[in-house]
Image (cartoon, rainbow, N blue to C red; front, side, top):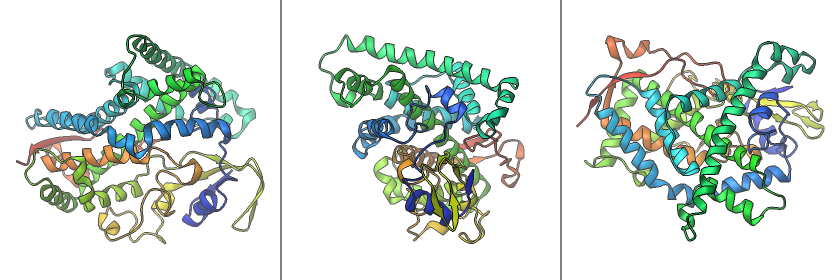
Length: 420
């Protein structure tokens, strides 16, 4: 295994030698959960991966499609703001509200409607937990019996079956619906409809299997929800701890909104301090701190080292974001460092790579960020937030979970007071 913890090493792996490191290692938990790694994230590099990635990028994640979902995002954000307003200064769980906001948006655009309830939340939580669990067999194959003994493999198979039952229901629902309409405009179709269109037209160089359809849906849905709401909670938490930053962001929001009831997506490009706040959050709390592992496909010379083919490779985005040679006072939350800075998170600046870079970088960055920006801007614009029971902001618990995605360990409980 190779671990890269510097921006220089990350650039070598994800740019200079990107093609040589474009493969994914065969990992037990992802393989069990994603139909034999037939999704976009975990499938091996090759023609199949290119085809399934292009389906998502062309039909869901391109600029025009992302913009076409604007009304969905604004409607769901307005509903969240309304829910907070109705709390009448009682304690609310912003972690839970953030989850449902992001989940409702992702479900609506990819599955055609939102899915709620404790059963659904529990299913997603179990999926993420098993996906990020330490699997001994991935690193020492002859000790894989430990994963059976610990019950991890049984948990993975149970989650996989439960998620398959859910996704099978979604696909069947769409197939039944298709019998009833002939001329529905393509703009109204969700990701599942598009995948079924491609399957029936046999538009790829291979047959699009039912399991591949479910794997792509699972990818977009699980990855889109889990990472985005986690980042939103980290931003809100840091703003609670830094009243100066909160006040500055509220001033920007108030100026941009000009007295309107909410901030709209067309306003976001004017909010430089909002964008800087989000970059600073992603630097300190990259959604997937170690990114998704890669694997070298051929021998390669890397920074003076001989790396053999088949080497599992991890890029430590968290370490790079906290590197004191790259960042002044790296543990401090200071959005100002990104004002008048060209550094971005889109995979071109290797000192900030929360979504990876190169061929295997996250294709859903644009889709995620616009939800994140809209939600954060409106919560901050509409409310003053304080911690309950007289807890001071500096004492807010910022401990992290131990999982694939970097979550705040305890829910963010606040009292929200309307600003206007």
